[in-house]
Length: 393
Image 1 (cartoon, rainbow, N blue to C red):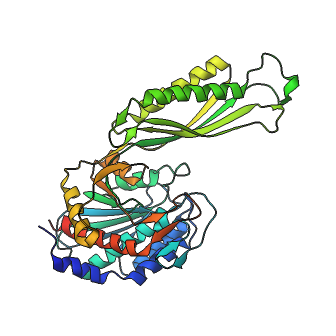
Image 2 (cartoon, helix red, strand yellow; image 1 turned 90 degrees about the horizontal axis):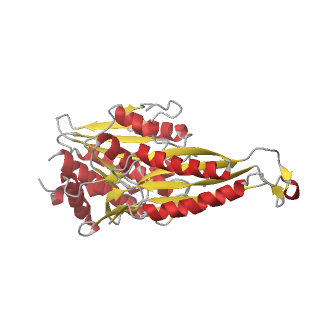
Image 3 (cartoon, helix red, strand yellow; image 1 turned 90 degrees about the vertical axis):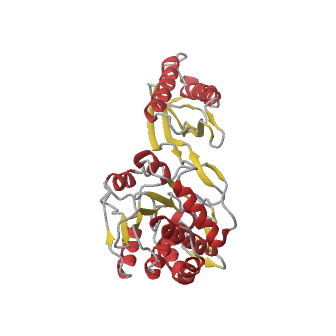
């Protein structure tokens, strides 16, 4: 089955730009830092319920902010395409929404309330068109996405609870390629400590361990480790990595510090064992602790495992057809995904084809987020076309 021109135009005509903009603004104007997205999920749920959608509020193991789930059913058996978005934002000062020409700005407009709203609009036009003849569409939205404040466990709870389709689209802010590979991620925090009280530098015992020296040795060892990891590489995803983003020690310039803190990331390729990655990292840290006679505490926070998509999966062809039919111009090349998103979890937990494709947007994890309204309309069209093509096949 191919997508007819009548279907393309029917769905395009039903996309309501003003309604879509209102939805984005409604979501963005409610602050929703990760772990505290209950209010925006409540608003999204009530908005959809007011429009007559059958809204479910599964907790997914996080009762503080129950997720939102909607099943749009054709009434006939068939495949289910899932649209999934997170509505939590990173922990930065809140920026209220503003519409400025083609842009909507504000906290979460890029990452990813804008894309989530586009998926909602696709759900609306699918219902209004009556073009879903078999199967169903499942829409889900949730909290606990953004690391390190969230650990993804609400989405994991949803997946394990049966809120999962046969394929999934994630409207994150990436649309130049179809990602077929992505690395797993853990964040880590290290605290190096010594015994003894705070003390002036000239009064310290000569044999007192130095937490800064120990941290410096960790930095050197991590540099060596990075060289080793560079040999574990993928032609599209690149190498496995270890990264240090922060180092802090001391209260004033001439006080011998009691502790030094380091923070960073560890990324690995799909197929690597999360447990083995952590064990290897912990072993390296403990070697430095023994050599430097310090105590080193490691806080290891796994975010997502790696991600893969079979470029020959039938869903890839379905999506390419929908992308092309929406007037996007040809098909998308294949590439890698530099960040972790929920596709990683759908692949690792449910072994289902997952494609990241969202609107033109910028400023994720900054105070200057924006999303293109024109491209939100395009994404809603692509998602609706993909659902008709996938579910009716």
